Length: 489
Ligand code: BG6
Image (cartoon, rainbow, N blue to C red; front, side, top):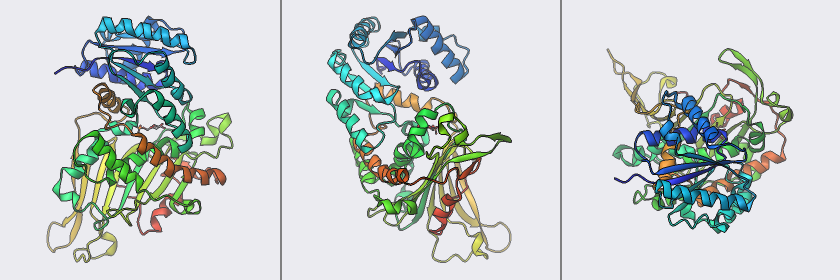
């Protein structure tokens, strides 16, 4: 089998993402033989670094991210640095010269990946200039990888898309949502459609509600500038959370092709109930963390984390009820919940099945337990099915039991696992696990209403303690429908 060959050009090569995710991912692809010797990486940023400084930096990143002892000399010899000003035409012509040289050294056939891992305000103009300065005429394929955020709202996302589409076709654009690279997120589709026992129950006749939680322990860290401009709805809900909703709600694809899968996801997102501004408070809850105790240590509230945050109205927590108005899902709430500085770092999905009409096997109402399917995404990876079975011994009373599967093939969170898969997909030209423009547009349209309402009304922040599971209103959101958040694995 041929390994893919390409030159990978990273815009923002001195940044955090490159260091924490991209270099380690490329290294793992190299070590596992998924890519051979015919590749090169060109790092671009403003700093006047040399190749040597860059290579040392790459080595450090590997040591930190992967705790390896390997001096990675051979690997890093494929790395080149080029000091770059994204606004200068000469920068692009010089880059083109360098790429042409590397293409003959590494025999990469003119295949180029342009990976934008930097401030989003330049995404559009970089795409444009790459085209204008002939960097796409390389004799091979050219692909553009774009990190989030893809726009700040629907309007700006549309503008950005328009700018990019002047230079790149939709099938050359790889919009990253790293959740789509996670093993158990990819597994949602397989669990649903490769098992006869789930599909005919996967609808409003048998499922009472679905709960998706992605909680984080970390606070805003050193990203105050980005985060305060963004907030949890833009940072997590517009992309990761709604992508998981789409995968859980979509119809079975007729084929496992990119177009078929993406079009089913788009259809699910099209069915999202658009809220009226006055309905937002009924369906959505926002929160911002105050101080609290995390693992025995006192931590500061969001507003104390940096000078510019002292009267911030930005949400660090979102809980919401998402309705999908189609035949399959009418009446079934999909509850989502995500936030910073919560009690634990954990992403999971709980599918709660409806109660049976009559259950004779429990004496107390309170002991009854519905069937649940839990999909553990991180840090544990696996699935658990909650059933009821006979209590051993005399009598025929029931008790809840669990069937569990743990996927221990891969290591847990903070590994470059997801990026490794997505980078490889990009190298082989598979856009399935990247977000299509139509998905981005529908999810922004949904989020915009919520954000408009929140921007118009000042919140009573802070409203949850660091180390908790969010504001009380997030619990009430489910209680008023007769449900509660399941704390199960
Ligand atoms: C990113 C957000 O997209 O996802 C971060 O910008 C967040 O704020 C991160 O911490 C969470 O990703 P993961 O893979 O750790 O769940």
